Image (tube, rainbow, N blue to C red; front, side):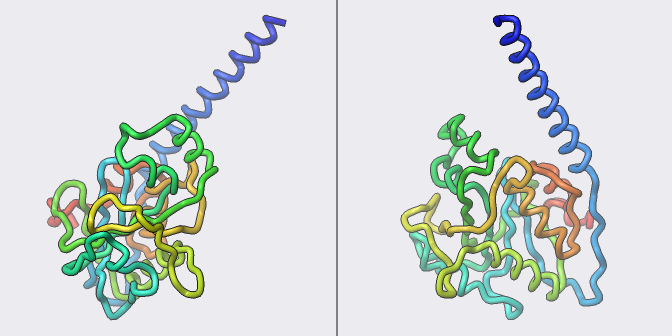
Length: 232
């Protein structure tokens, strides 16, 4: 009986190790497989941004633009400070419990991590209203046409849960004075992370990206940072 248990434990450990290795190999291979930018017939004169904190990415867009109104989806009035001078809206998607209960890595628990990668929790959108976009190695500038921007904004807007035509703010949930959280559609899991979300939205409009990645650095490396604008 003991031998069977040991054999089963070894088999389980071996299978887990193999799964981790295959996941890592897929992330490396597909995360370095660049998707070409699709040339648009329209003039590319709108700049959107990909902003990373090292582990997570947000997509920042103009808060006020004739091509799309964010009024139905996110409002500065949902923030703690009102953000009266905001010119950009930065949106990130992820596991709801992770967002709300893990503001720092020190708050992360094994249970929260396992439920997140297993797709067991609801999701949320984190929206920040920015006066300016930082220019550093963790910010990438991406120039798109009005058609591409409209498509990007509509696709992201579809991730907001709505009731009676309005988004659902998560009341009392903030990281700072200029942000808010909203109930979201979709499931976060090992193959559909916050960075997979950002990469997918940029690929869908032909702005480039990578084949697939769960990691921030892969999607960031697909675009020039604002400190390297001459590369584009």
